[in-house]
Length: 104
Image (cartoon, rainbow, N blue to C red; front, side, top):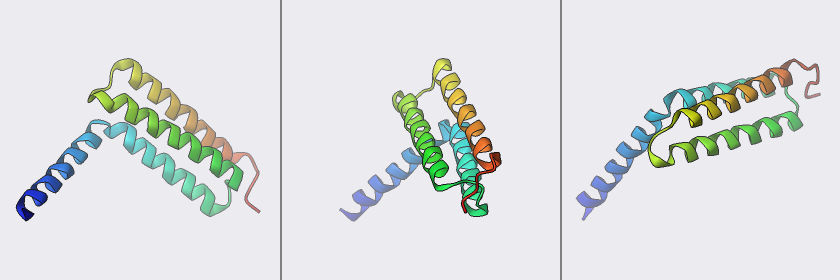
């Protein structure tokens, strides 16, 4: 019984890692954008309101990425859409960090 449970768990780990491998560039970019947001909060460049807005955008992009990959592949239209969303979010992060409003 324990061998069956261990096998199922290992299979889940393998499937979980392969699913993230396919979305590599998008998930890597999401991680970099999250790091930029975190750095902006730590330095005081991003206000709590801006943080909330940026986090909502990140959550939406992640949901769209998961939906796009739900069938196991990403078509060109979905890839363009995700890239556009990430570009827009990247601009918003830059603006939030450089707009002169700091977290007092």
